[in-house]
Length: 156
Length: 156
DNA sequence: TATTGTTATACTCTATAACTATA
DNA sequence: TATAGTTATAGAGTATAACAATA
Image 1 (cartoon, rainbow over the protein chains, first blue to last red):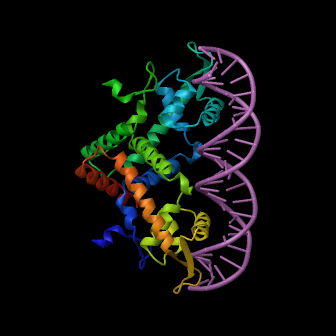
Image 2 (cartoon, each protein chain N blue to C red):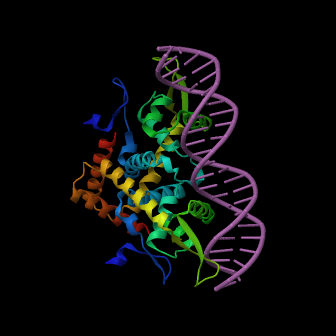
Image 3 (tube, rainbow over the protein chains, first blue to last red):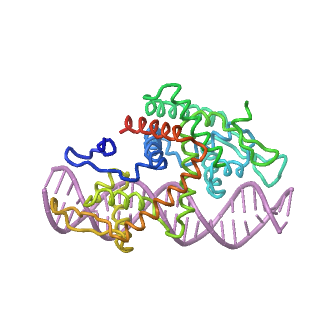
């Protein structure tokens, strides 16, 4: 079963993963790389900046959220958040309004155009994942989610 | 159970993930972010460049491997590979030798120092993952690996 | 003609620090 | 004093294209 670890690059040459193959991190990264690339390929026309999709989705799910709160969830730097919200405002997908509870903050809201765009992006994401995860059954998918959540909960 | 999706940022404010929480990609990224950061924190002293660890591990597992073969496995660009192998050579962890089968290629080999360094890095990785994955049982870990591999096999 | 490795370059993303206005 | 947001800047990573040597 040694072959199972190898990846055939050409007909002749097989490359061993060695110890690398023993780690969850490496296996997750491989899958993650593919999912990210597939989603990027499906959304090249929108030239999505990293973090923009998550930011817009979080604003939609939490009307009035602040830039700082987005940073805390997404591990984004606050200066990157400024750039991303700038883009969202330029494209008319979100707006900054003054916060009523803290005048230092901006309260962020999606626009109708932003919601439409978000629907579109989620549709693309769904297609992307459906293709990638087609080989897993419903219960296996739920299992995978549950395991990932268990790990995440501990890490937090 | 609505609260289960929220992440408490302060005592008062809970942030909803909304539709984002429905996707495997988002859940994997969260976990992946943490694993990567934990490993980086455990190896800051070595100032590891992205891809360097994988490259060294692949050279170790495949003595005589070419730069191009490494690129194919790791999704690294060939110009990035040059930089990484340069660093590995400077630090005395790997060497380029002329390939006997193709004079365009370099055949890459680890040095004893490189193997020692690799042992050290794998030990750090093992500790990192052990902490992160402590809440999963042996069988759950194997299950997670198997599911990730099933997905990867299909993607390839 | 195509591939391996190299070099140079430009672009994106990230990290940092200094600044303002508020708390 | 600390926090939210802004700005500017430098660094790291990635992508691209042009090139030489070899297949």
